[in-house]
Length: 295
Image (tube, rainbow, N blue to C red; front, side):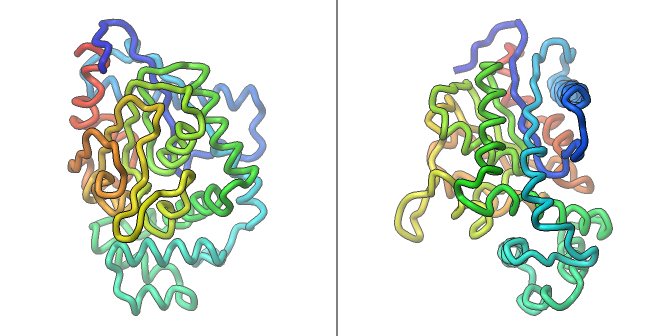
């Protein structure tokens, strides 16, 4: 239940794709960059809530560096497409879920990635250039995390997030994009971590063949009634997804996971898709977070 105090709200934020600080960052510089990101996330939250950022005590759980060994192992790939077989498989499943025509989906192995990018860009009214870059980053990082069920890379990323939560003991865990997958697994793996609220933003947790069927713990049941479960350590789970966000598909996580208290579908930023800052500033996020801050 919301604590409803007028004091600081403690938050652990778990980032999504495209947030790497780089391969050669020193520990000192890493902490500096973590502090910068934490301040930015707190500022975005405060803006949406209409309060000062000083009222939000936010720690930034940074796990992207844990994925770098696997990304380096797979190589950079083609600048015009996706060469890794698992990334190709994930791209196909994602494209199918979005409704990309089969002739476009099946042609992606021999044709440039821009065929799929063009279709998705037109469907969601997005700029092709940034979308193409984002798609390559998305599947590179998702594949790096989910490639094997118990890889050292996956465990290291999950434990990094769990450690930040254990250290902060936050009221709220906010997880965006791939971060919602990492945080979901971290909270399941550590039932002693007990945030009052688990808030997922722009989450791909239900994406079949890409994320959903690779989760640990594995969703249970017999098709078509297969469900994931709310992490037992999370007091309340709320999900927010922009219908114009091509990453948070299929929509409405509550159709695929049991224990979600609220499942908001809200227009966040029509022409600036999947950005954490837009979700953090949104009215839906403010309405969800406000009671935990007493506003």
